[in-house]
Image (cartoon, rainbow, N blue to C red; front, side, top):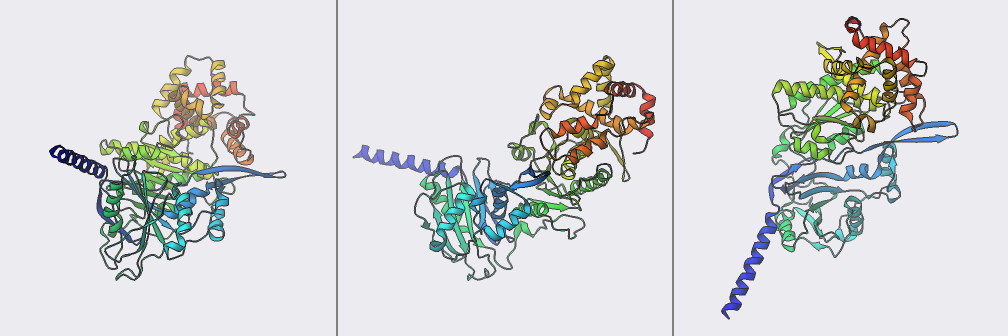
Length: 553
């Protein structure tokens, strides 16, 4: 009998420890009040707020008869997801809590397709089935389809009613799903509860996921520690961190409607740590608590540079009304690296960078630099000049890529610009010039010509993998020479290289070998041996370089 009791006590102790360990895997902490959403609920303890990524952009080529044109398109699923997703909170154990609104079903005929923004707006208004039913038993099939579209989950059992000790929630149902590491619950707020008469009428979904399968104890803890603490935001109640204005712009004004601008704002609407700042052509979103001054300086500099870019590189026909540029400024290096881990960074890793332009999402992404303030300002300034030029090219040229020598050459050139009292001055970079000069002095003109021929035909994979440091330097010197040195040449035989490059890039919409064709067209009437000779002379002759430096652009 004694042994039997000991076994029972041991079993209970093990069971208690397992329950405790299970609960220790994640905890719910403070209650977040989301007045813009109309919901209040606890979030994961010590979690970071993770906004939804900007939808990825793809460029498509279309033809009809002899007409050929390009279109910028987005994933229909990503655009739909942006209309439903509210926010995600991620803790150090990779547990994820998501909140979403369930308002429309994804039209299945658009699955796997990319659409224009206008096409998506039409799809939503005419093709999407609305989720308006008030009672769960009536709408449960729609919500099951919604869950499959939103998270790829399938209902794997009968829904279970979640009882509340108050009447703030009208209905709430736990939904067993096919993956054991997920917990899903749908709920509607009770508009009849005192103070909640303005609560939203739509259904919401709470979705919790963990790296490990969830036990029955985990599910009970989620139900007690999270689901039963959901409520509407009471009228007149303190909104906590959301009393802080999310718009930190020094001058608040109404800008023309932009889907890009609105998506950026919507992506952070549920987060107390995130804020935004706007200018005429940019919007910055950030969770850096002390970056408002830096944000203002960054946007001012980007606007100044953009006005200069527009004069040198006017937008192509059809993109006169360029999209707003998104700047994303992270408070920590860890968040920056996490955000970029799935992005295709050719020849680079996020750890190697302090900022980068992501062409797929058309964002300028910056991390917090922890060094001294003067060094930090210098680094960030170089980032926004270099990566900001990449972003401008992509926006101004209809999301077309330019050749590495052209793209990186201009980015490194503008990275070295001097800005003084609102004026921009393009100057040579000493490090790049010394690196290239040290190589050129040992080459014959014929060898330099052959190297330039290979260099100009490089794709990005070759540019970033075969002696990339020298490639950056050569691209800088080459572009600098075309802008400053070539105009000094007798009869200016090279003055049309950059204009011809852009002319061909804009004229021929055929995407196949587009960059190489533009380079070939730009240099088609150039004697490359003579060009190599004049370029080498410019690099070696300090008098010519000083004269070029004095030439206004």
